[in-house]
Length: 136
Image 1: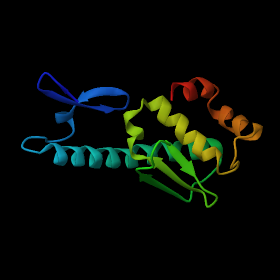
Image 2: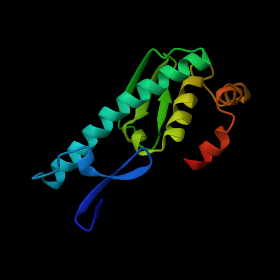
Image 3: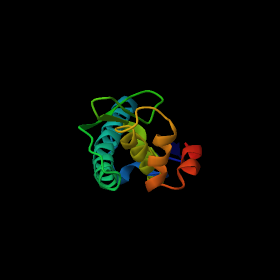
């Protein structure tokens, strides 16, 4: 995003000057977009790892692996092998929504569908999950 000569990116729910994170001087638009993608992937790995470790303890589950990928319109997924994939754009969201996505995917380790037991598990550590879900 470019506002009166200054470039911004969305990070943790806020618009921040791009030069806080990326040296954009002399980069073409394509190179800049590539650097922004790399930044999002790097920070998504870091933040989802931290948040997943935190909520694994609270939920009593362990993910086999955590990946960051460009997965279209979904924020995350969990397969039957307990492998969680998060969208690389997850770090554009505020932390409370990132936490909701992490909890949601971790709860799929025990409940692969969205039945009542699944939502009870989500609510056990995040009573306001419905509000957060609506914000997405």
